[in-house]
Length: 204
Image 1 (cartoon, rainbow, N blue to C red):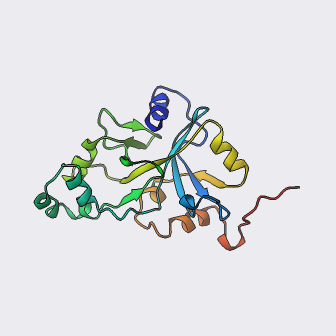
Image 2: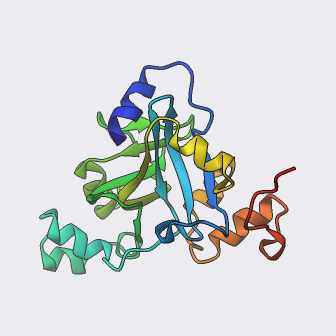
Image 3: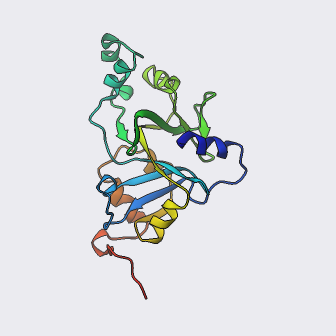
């Protein structure tokens, strides 16, 4: 489903209204998997939505992942460039957790790269992992295992029920390495103090 939503968008002139937006979990989020989550929405349409959590870290190290996938052997992994060695693997969401997705700046593209916005692409093939390991990857990138997905109308309902806040994404907040403070910093850009944020929707 995830890549289907993106492929449909590839040929579409109009983007979904939540594309290239941050989805920020409200304090009252009932699903623990999304507690304090910031999700970058890659594709949104009448058929559903797909995004990646950008502020949850996997215990798996990038060099170990490359060895597991057979891209490098253990000796090659030891000699990785520092930037690749320190590349953080994130938990993109609860769906298809064995599958990797790389969000990246548009200075790197292969046949399988799909545009998310004017400046950001998503690639889900091993070509980009080889490029990153060789120091030939995109200027900015983040990798996640798994993704977050919603069926038709599901995400809109969750937003209406005060489960999520949304705001336009910025490359700086998307790609910077300060993962622990990302949730609070994105709320701060909206002028929101977490201590004052109501956990329940107000009803007149």
